[in-house]
Amino acid sequence: MQPLFLGSHPALDFLNTSFAPDGVRVETIGEGGRYLDWLVAAGLLDAAEPAKLARRFGGKALDAAAAEARRVREWARDWLARWRTAPRGDYSREIEALNKLLAREARNREVAAGASGLELRELPTFESANALNALPAAQLAALVTQEDPALIRECAGAACTLWFLDRTKSHRRLFCSATVCGNRAKVAAFRERKRS
Image (cartoon, rainbow, N blue to C red; front, side, top):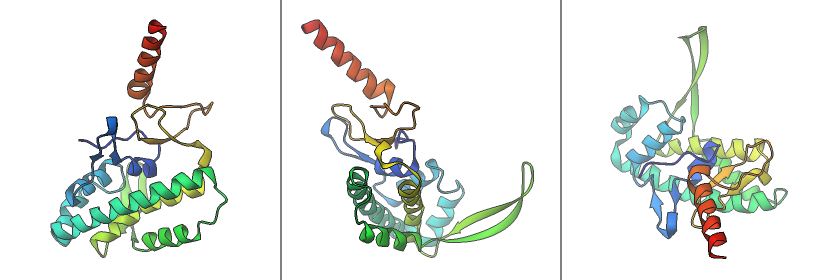
């Protein structure tokens, strides 16, 4: 199954790489190649990088990076569930772990011709396949430092496990997708009214 990008933030899209529609668990980053595909689709990795990284590190190392990413995702899911209800709690262990992930990535700078002239670009460099996990870690860091925890929500759909950041003006978003979970809820409410 293709990854879903309904979270309105890359960190929540990362959490949504594992979901359980109707109680059946779906894993979208099961192995290294799929993880690289997700990083590209999420805009965290340039489209030319996966082939280079596969040649450089090999499938076994990328599979190990994907396995670690799944562990990081579940750790982050647990942390964010606690953080959004108690944002002022003591999260020093979580912050330390996040900082260790962030430290894996190095960046190089280069000047290149862009659409509006010369521009300075920062390019990530990876000393190991596991350094790829600094990319979603950076998004998690951005989420916890820049977003309101009260706006991080789990979908209200009866069988949905997806998370999203409520960026609506009224902050009343209930569903990961109005066309899927929102529509299902409307149909269920309509049927219930007809039965009554």
